[in-house]
Image 1 (spheres, one colour):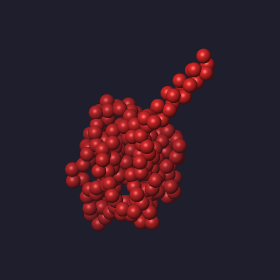
Image 2 (cartoon, one colour):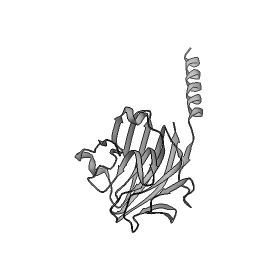
Image 3 (cartoon, rainbow, N blue to C red):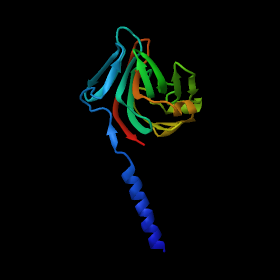
Image 4 (cartoon, rainbow, N blue to C red):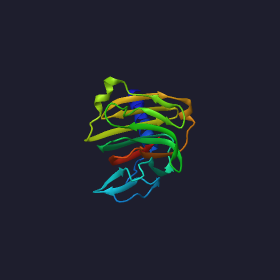
Length: 199
């Protein structure tokens, strides 16, 4: 009986493993294929890294995926230089430089990296408590993980859970993943190892 149970359990795990989508790289390290630039700020590839940098207009800028992603796990690394005010949007739509959707914040120290912000809507949905602000490594590579399933968003920064938010409006959202350059100028962020798994 125990043997039959173990075989059945193994079959269940095999079916689950087969049903999972493969991990897909969002950035090829060579060019911006699969992405679209919104605004006049700078997006380019340098030494195999994706770089965003403020341009002379010092306005908002976005780099969005051509594809839309609903339920997923996204992992990436970022390194902030100068002012690192940026972010990772999900289920977002863009017209010009007006974006609608939800942002996982990427910001200078003590400014809520890993929190959730709704653009052109309710504003902050979750800000990071002071005792979690020390997980960001300014000027070094940081690893961020974002999981979006239905109406639930969970974020991690360097292995530390930052947010676990359930929100019905997020559950209704549809759109792309987009990286941000905040307005104001002086911003530069490097990105690498952007990988997504659809759920």
